[in-house]
Image 1 (cartoon, rainbow, N blue to C red):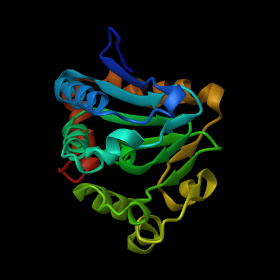
Image 2: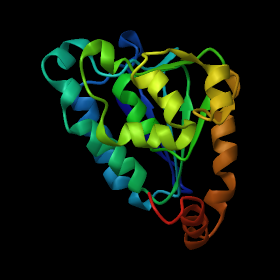
Image 3: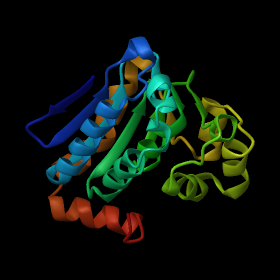
Image 4: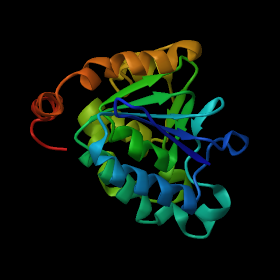
Length: 207
């Protein structure tokens, strides 16, 4: 349910492939994603995307009720993604919900189709967000808008999300992967130490 393609030039493409369940994430899928993110230290660039019309609905509902909603795997995944030194692009093929926000917030650039929606219904479901998610979201869109999503339970549509800075660019579905590849072209062509150095400067030396 997780696809991985590694190109000769060092581009890692990670695809959530459970469209019949809105790419909701199981324990096994999270473990596989953590393993991929941990092993991707040699990647020159990384694209994270999904199959179907939803990027991810968050945790699988049955497994969430059994404890997955509060599993440390979510934080392990977002931390592993954030620590990668390569340029990471989330190519959001549709709606992003719940704990799946973590790995996307840990990416450097977020592209989304115009029909995507963004929400994180932790208050409604009775859970706290993952520890780093609120901070990363606040850094992108500010404290008030973060409270609107996390505490107010607001569902944000793609144009507004782009205006806020939660998404960096809206791209039509048929152009999404090409747009992500175009963003990574220079990083893949550059010397690794130059690409990594520029990203460290942009990140303020932290991940």
